[in-house]
Image (cartoon, rainbow, N blue to C red; front, side, top):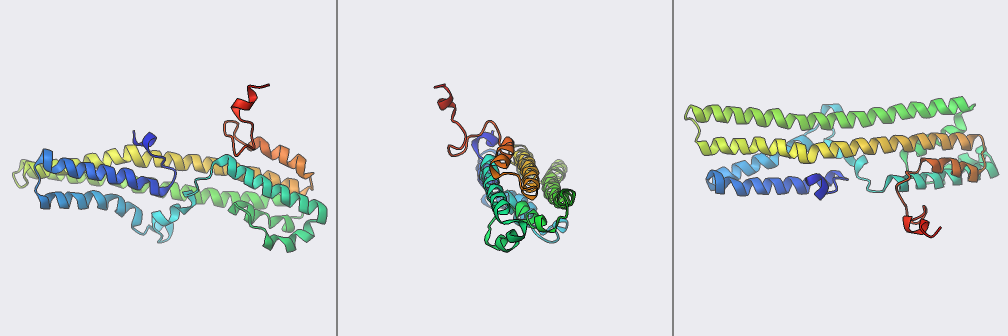
Length: 272
């Protein structure tokens, strides 16, 4: 399966499987179907144009942006546990500063801080606007709904773009078979059309669906990170001790991931 042979962690990772399937189809066409050089070139153009059309055509759902541009958010290969640790470090520093100097002093200090997560960068400003813990929670939840809507829009747009490959390829194949039965097209061209349809189905199963599953896992991990950030900001607002806050937030770390020595390695546990 291509899913195990390639990482599919970023949008760029789909290009290698697509190129390999395209090259394999082009190699099969003249050998098995007996296509001429011109017919093989046309087939290659169709196979390359199908994914490019789905990725680089401006999409109305994305307000004119292409799907390729909108998937920048998924180009992060940092493990989820490392992103959680980075956010915990930043929240611990924020809690230490606020506990020592007060939330009012934090306002002047915020422009100097470079938070790694957009959600944290946005919601940390609510520490200064919230009059109560309930206000802070409501502000952060409003931003959470906006992030969820943006993630859902991207996933739905990608899913619809993927689903467009199948009916188009199947329709082309059906028309080609009917024309071949009528004697308008040669059996070789009908076979090439079948190859296009098979290519669309195989790429959907081996590339696009695993990519969608990866995006869904990414969204789930990001939702957990935003939940942790919201809890951390509430701790900062209540001026919880930074070390106690860190212990509470480290409960969000995945138990199965070890990050740069911050979590105990399995081999080390054997000595106890």
